[in-house]
Length: 455
Image 1 (cartoon, one colour):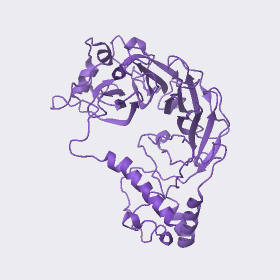
Image 2: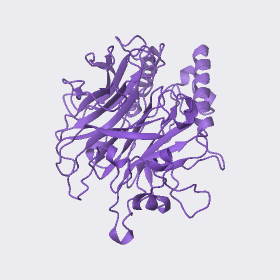
Image 3: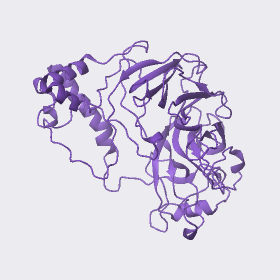
Image 4: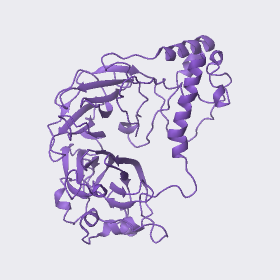
């Protein structure tokens, strides 16, 4: 037990250093990615066209001009570090900076679009732009985009090992202003203008060379019909025969609740993609795919199911490819879990005070200086995302990690023991109340399948 306490304390310290210590805000330590605050001092150069950033040739338009002064809002951010140059970061978000690009009297009719933010100093300062192809973009880069929608967002970013960066996006909205929602998904690509593997790594991911629509939604209004969302992207950086492949996955919403996970791959650096492949046909209501590539080039995709659409349950599943994403194994259940989804409430109830320690017999919790402090080894908080429509009401759960090569999965004995002790101590009523907590997550014993918690 003492050994477990020491391990738990070290785990808590690691979490603090990785999340609390490193991520803690200090005066003057935060950096603005979106320079949309002119004429305020310290607001950088405003929004600069991606075309100008890459070529040095001047270009601007009403959208970029509005973004520079908008003091707008952004949400659902993403950031990724160049593996060739860890001082180079690319970021993105749903950027609302251009919604008043026709002037305030016209109303918020401008685009919400995918941001393109670039840092060369490890995130201390940023240059702000938009991914080309937005409505009103008349730069030479606009013709390289296949996008057809009024808005684009939900960014996901991946780098390969050769200076290329890929931005995945869900895009919707009819530029003509109708209620049609489209619901496409596309991948935008950026490269080093000096060529792949160029020694000038500060120019990695700088030159835009097109956006490819991976799947088209239907044109039904108000999110009816086919709508693609919940995107994930990854690139192979292993140096194997799969090196350089780009993998993209999403959830296809069809209006009936029986959502499906689809997957595509590109073997030409994001220029073209394979036909969409459905990863699982027997399960119902699938969302939140996440892609990981292990050091041998194997591709894993995890996703979740929902109890609300039967016959189903709240669970995490995984599929595996050993042929560079050409084919996948049948889905295997990793774990079930009890959802604990934070949602906005107009009249929230007060948080109850916990009167009894989680696990008094073991002495756990004392290292956190309070019986009521959460033991970081017991529970992992779920990631949440607030959004509109029932399609967006679900949240990504916490996920267990595997103890074998992926062929078998289990909950740790410690988690089962904690659950049993809790039920014996509190009885059926107390156990039901405690069930609102999310399940624990065990540590993996081999190179992990990365799970990104977002949305």
